[in-house]
Image 1 (cartoon, rainbow, N blue to C red):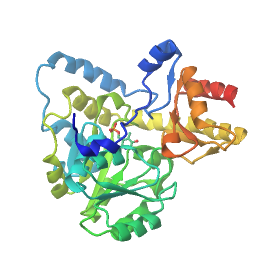
Image 2: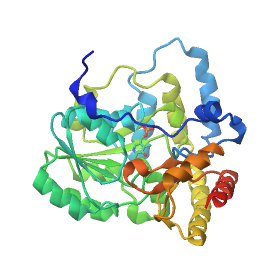
Image 3: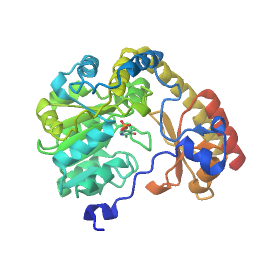
Length: 363
Ligand SMILES: *Cc1c(COP(=O)(O)O)cnc(C)c1O
């Protein structure tokens, strides 16, 4: 059977290995498995969300509120933007997909060398060419050179970046965007911005400021990371109303379930929970930094809830991640990104202790 030609050179996205598969493949009990592969919040979500969800389960027969009023009001308050400057997606992933269809069909996108894998996959869906920088960390001079020579339709800035954890200085980023013409869309993916803002004020990008200054920018956020709602699939885009209006044309009806809308709305009301888990995250991250120092492993300074451990030639990230998996520890091998490294989500104290114990046996 013939399919869309564009599908030929697309590699299927591989999510962090689900616990269910490790149970089946290796016969390990779920209680003995630790998943530190997808940057979820190890402390779960606010208890308030859990109560709200119970309530929702009593009216599942009704379609969701497609105007998403409650969540839009919450986001509008949180970011001090208007409701028509917001679009909500089934994860910010879906907003990336909308952007690609709206702006990159048959065109070009520019991204960092190593970055969130979905930019490339969605680009290929619309036959867009992917131009990448060479540097591991975002080098905005290099971005600018490529912007001038390649004239991309969309530029993706992932800050903090996944899977390396580094972040761009907000002021430097603003200067860069000011040099970009008004017909090139700049996507600022802030999936881990809550973490970066906590760690260093200079890295904090404010969506309001971005869209006030620039008419060619969209900021993306998600409930999957700091808010602890990876299973609910809710993300958002913040941009000028004229851009949001175009993206809306691509949105499937009822793209967010009633359950997810409620969970995200209530999660926004419990900022204390989020800040507490972020504080714990950076406390625990120190242990990874110390561990790396002791073991002489390179660790990239991280503004997120994960660390990237880069090995030298004497060690192999594929072998290490496979061996960890057999022992019930799921981490992300970055070999597919051309790196001899693993990405490990900073877990709870016990999860991290388990990680150090297992990897020490291997090294
Ligand atoms: C996790 C992540 C997203 C989006 O996740 P969703 O679950 O689809 O909201 C977007 N960008 C980056 C860089 C991420 O790490």
